[in-house]
Length: 422
Ligand code: EPU
Image (tube, rainbow, N blue to C red):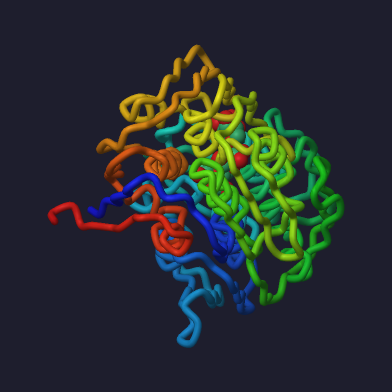
């Protein structure tokens, strides 16, 4: 397994291009199951989770191939879905695999997906996904660790989620587009990845109103056609690169960004003392001084994203003053804290809140985390720490960032990837 070695102390400066959104891509790949036409996705990030979803599609019998001329273009054709079952071996690697259940039952009347279970950031049930599919008329059965959904023909219904769930909203939306009649999803997640999926489904022929709001209305159609879509920039990768600018007191410009999708993140970066300038297709962050201590509370969109929490906390460990970081979306998303403390950070966790007292310096250390965003936070801390930080189990970073070390190196970071043996 690879590791990343960061030598801290360089102020990052320069321009970098963001990749396409990982989480949008995963849902869009699942949506390809809904049509026998060709789904072409462009600007797809080459990250491990996308590879896992491609394997899932392969296991279902769906053709999914990288374009011969452009290695960020995926071509998917679900002419036939010969084997509507997502196996444990793949689902256990990535919970988002569960996104294929809605499309399978909508297109074929049946789907079987391994129950994803818990993961490093918490219990993460799928009860809301199942509640939505049941409301549309699917019969749900749990069988030997698998969730089976079956229905002759799904029928539109009212679905009111008890919690705001991104993948739950996407799953039910994908089922409802081919259901008979009208579905209303209340308390729908408003994340941009939900809106992007709705727009793409619309381009495939679905009838969806209320895109981007918490009430989505869908009029079912008999069939959907193919689509050619360029995936929007990854707002979390963009936020991560900007936070790298903050922690190193640098001057970083990230292209491929839709600044409108990052407002809460930009607001917190500004509050922490950075100068953030929104350009036409880019965001520039300049940070001349130490960050200031701030309060952060994660929340569903348009609130501050839980997926940015670890990276911003890493930057705040070096702030002038104290910060309070409260995680309200997942119950166990502070795996980076003990590792940051090993680097000299002063952080105390009490329930859902982490109290961060800024320190003047961090010292490089071997670290490890079992969550993608936590690992990114550790790289950011390493960029500003004295000496070398070795981030082990790079596997987690590779799940969601395409060659993050190359992007950071382009900005002047001293960072390299090594295989664990040498
Ligand atoms: N929840 C339930 N029941 C459900 C579904 C969710 O109780 O049926 C709870 C979860 O346990 C959690 C909260 O609702 O406490 C929100 O979870 P949500 O369903 O919104 O998360 P998700 O859809 O599984 C996506 C992203 C995550 C991101 C969250 C929140 C994908 C593939 N994943 O997960 O991304 O943190 O939304 O924004 O879209 C990441 O990229 O690192 C990542 C973890």
